[in-house]
Image 1 (cartoon, rainbow, N blue to C red):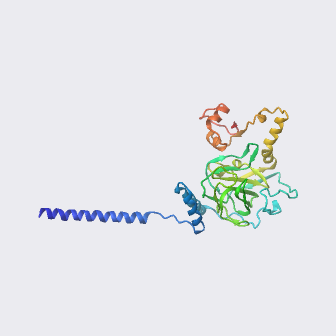
Image 2 (cartoon, helix red, strand yellow):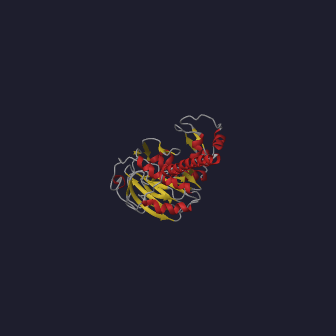
Image 3 (cartoon, rainbow, N blue to C red):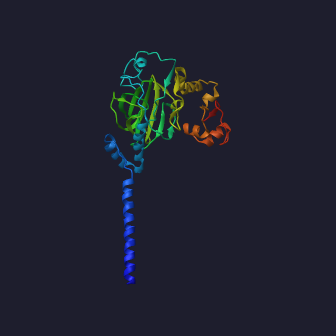
Length: 326
């Protein structure tokens, strides 16, 4: 009798445990969130996902889609954006003024940045500036192949092309504020030439096509063909605009692109500008800058900045102070 009662008691306990376990399993399955990917991206991303060493990187695309819900669709739309500035629509050259009759470029202009959306966020692999006697007219943002690239502003796709020895697969978008943005080394296009796009809309997938040593997005900001240092427009740590407007000054931006050539010519001619002939370069400290952010912006290290400027890693920077980074 004693054994029989103990057996019944144990069976009841086991039954209760099994019931609780079944409930937990059902709750886990129901509670687990499902990631739903739009059909327009599903097949392309599935293929690219298989090529990645770490499938968790696929989450970047999902995050990008979720971010679209935060974009305000109140930016003005134009059939051909900024046509009053450019007067024509060129689908052949990145520089829209190339091979054209001279067009007056405004000496100064305030460019609205209030509707900006980061195309992608990542570490800066290479900053804007001269390198090996070539002008690098944008910044290289690290990504993984298949990451979603989004439109920085609303506008229209002016160029959708492939350049084997340069940009690889690339897009050029023109925007109502007069800016044009260039997106290089893409792996797939998600828009067609002449498409109208909204700020934050997926326009391509990142890659490493063309003249590239690894997956990254080459991003340029141009105004009437003149490339602008993205670090002047954006905080490259947060990828937020530094100000609601960017004050474009043509003479300053043109000088920045011609500066290296000018320094080289002065050096060959025996010029006395020792800072120029030695290739020194300086960063003017802005609000929020730190030695770490400056080092990341120019692809160097905090220790090197300290050595070049006689500073310590904990030194306080003053707004307007010039920090030598090369």
